Length: 183
Image 1: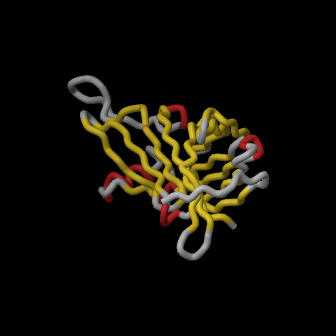
Image 2: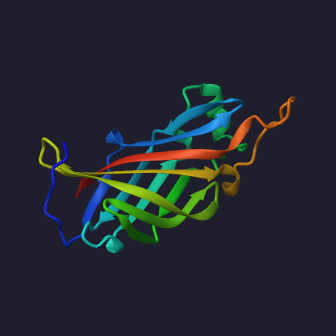
């Protein structure tokens, strides 16, 4: 249960807790959607609830940690055809601005880099609240979801189908559910 704390005029430094956070995605494959996740990621959130423009986010994902519950597909996704994890081991995001866009909603802008290609994006982030865990540590929750075109980041591999169309869809829905621990 989230507890309300008085608004602070200072910035909280939060380290992402990967045990209680998720980085997931889904993409069309033929006629259904394949879902997956990344198991290794890290980041820091500098959060000033009273002055969100003073806030910032850095986030990294290890591309080799991709998991779709199918070993052969995961190996293919790590290969040169997709993430080329050996050459491009990380997906990175570093905010350049944070703006309030409603109560507990923020537009977090910055470059997202995948496979060495950077594109400026705006993440619609929802602040879920603050709570103290049983050990007295303050935690904050955030969520975002965005749909990106994988080809914009150099992920262009595909296979044409006999019946027309392609094996893999271009649009990928990415969802981050983040719990940060105050430092």
